[in-house]
Image (cartoon, rainbow, N blue to C red; front, side, top):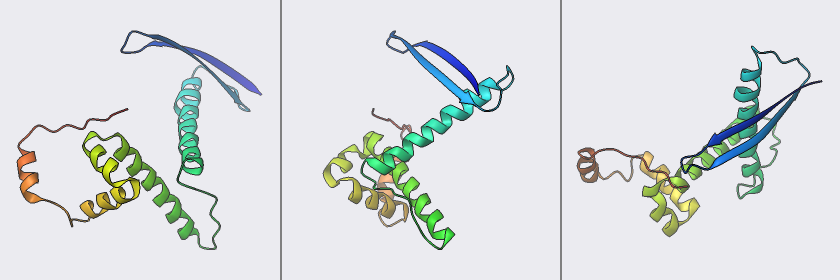
Length: 141
């Protein structure tokens, strides 16, 4: 087994100093040429994927192992689950959708977004007015 560790320090926008510890274990040896790619780019990305799946399984999506005899059905279910999670994340963090989300709830808001993209709810007068203004996307955390 091969082991590498890292102590990461940084200062955020508020001037606060932070320290985090990371460690990776691998059956393959690390080298100066591979450590950054394997640890920072691959392992941390894998951790992010695992966190998203954990959210989908335990925090309201009820995502479970899907058993089917049709491979395309399983792939479609997984794709739709990921898309739902993406839309929910965007809706929760988008300032412009926040009042709609609070008034309608998550499910109806996602249906509303779908209907909007399908072209059923586009208000052309509003689009013309907004097209003349500067564009911005503001996220809330």
